[in-house]
Amino acid sequence: MDLAPAKGTTPQRRPEFEYEGFNALFDYWNSLRGGVSVPGTRDFDLLHLTSLLPDIVVSEFHSELDIRHRFVGPAVVERFGYDPTGKNSLLNQSDNMRPQIGRYYGEVVNRPCAAFARFTNLYSSGRESVAEGLYLPLHSRTARWFVNLNRVVRFSDWLDEYPQTLTAARILDLEWIDIGFGRPTTPASG
Image 1: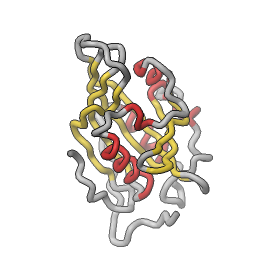
Image 2 (image 1 turned 30 degrees about the vertical axis):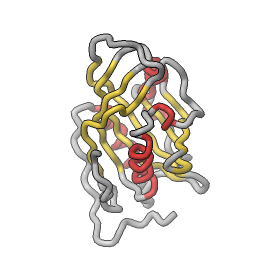
Image 3 (image 1 turned 45 degrees about the vertical axis):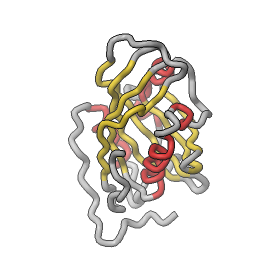
Image 4 (image 1 turned 180 degrees about the vertical axis):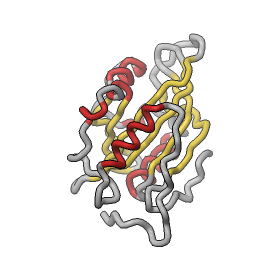
């Protein structure tokens, strides 16, 4: 994978996120870049982020149809109602959202770029949340990975139980963050 920045692009400075955890994750990820454009999976050490660990997910991107969770923090597991580690993350999206989410994850790992999203989740427990996530690419010689930190902004009142947890049931906002390779032309919504 060619990790040289796209010709003529200048990396965007990190946005100032309201939640300090997003700033901490981005800064740690950025500190690992050194002379490379995207940090390697071997360099990325979750133990440097112990206070954020409960809400971190690390995923391996095989294709826009197959994205496997490799680490899922315990707070995420609790909200899901089960441990999705090893499972295709797209199984937690509704059928109509899977292609869009697969394309978005593809942009993060293939361009590469970072993304900040605000979305709704529907949990099997009957709760709905508005959540935010920061998505950052990682690379290895054999696979494409990304790490994301999730934060629930607020829970709704109890609704009817759902047959399964649906993440990103609705995307409220998506911001592409240029890390030196430009921004996607993929629309941020719809």
